[in-house]
Image (cartoon, rainbow, N blue to C red; front, side):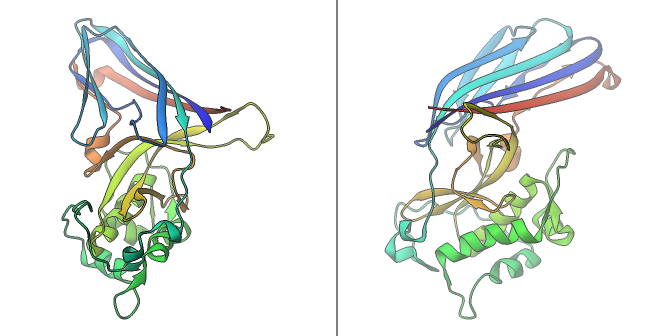
Length: 287
């Protein structure tokens, strides 16, 4: 199993020293069975007056910083060492009773978050079913993942917010978070329990596969779907891959707005903020 080393640095620059309000951070990976945090360090400058940690209702780690000092620069540097185990997903992993969709939900099955999908999204989702409304569950989930990968353009989009699923359908293009939300909306319409995941994507280098350290990575978003048998399974429609290989979960949420890595406020003029810079590096070394 590889050891991932993740460094995530966010720096805010201001024209003059400003005061800072509370800042909320989701930077520490989840404690899931296939990823174990070995070490974590969070350096903040200026040093906060108070730094507190909590967990939300879905088990995500949330840190909150409160400040006294004014400064012209605010910097957050998170460094994580994490033991990561790749988990695949195959048709035979699915419980017998759920291998053909639709299937009966047992008592342990999570309740799907109700959401009224746009008629275009409903029609698109139903296009993955046979004429009688059934489908092989594995083929349905993998087919939707790979269809988004092949039919939709993946483009980095630095503007805040997320496109609606119908906008992504119309444009046939979107960032990873837009693709994830489209898949979640489509599967939720069909009755699957699906949720939004934010985290990091490890990108192996093109160099020698035997080298001790490989570098590359960025923040990323994808979907998780509950499948009887394996439970929550990762689906990354931006890459078309299934399973958690090269994916590190930070937060799983029902609403993408709940998974913002870093958010806060400052007290000053709107023109005081000059820039925000984000740098992410993911390295993997053999365990």
